[in-house]
Image 1 (cartoon, rainbow, N blue to C red):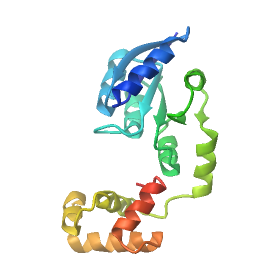
Image 2 (tube, rainbow, N blue to C red):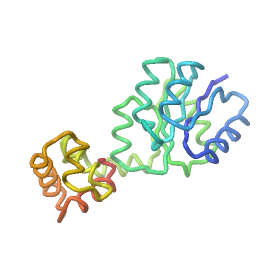
Image 3 (cartoon, one colour):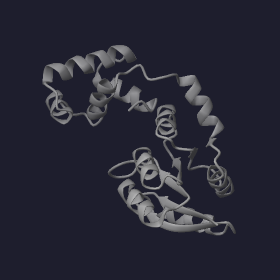
Image 4 (cartoon, one colour):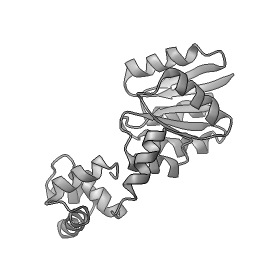
Length: 201
């Protein structure tokens, strides 16, 4: 029996996944949670074989939770299921040790097969997402440029971005200008939008 942990902050989706996976003879849902932190705690408590994690949840996301789960339960393989299948997220997930990455449009039968695949030591990446990731290339942004663009995504002022990033306003402006230039954007808001579209922030 493959013991599965589900983490998704959308209750309807999480319970639907649990119901569908529970129909499989060889899969047992041992825990459900609505946050990345909850996933790490539940993994430590229940020692699942596979953790199925939503990418974007409140607090830490699925990509951040995966390595923490791996430390707590080294035998547990993580799968990211997301409605935000951008190339940058796929690359971050693979770098974090995630063994499966697929969109929420995937069928229940495919998800069950992916659970079996990663439990058996294999990997699975949705072919369409893999092709997009190869085509998109790597992010041209430095980690600091990515940080300030992420803080700029909600229309924050330079002073607010500087405070969030623990930088001076002058240094923040330099990072924002550099990021905008690299992305061919007219301003920080456009740069943030471009970076988000590619999954680089």
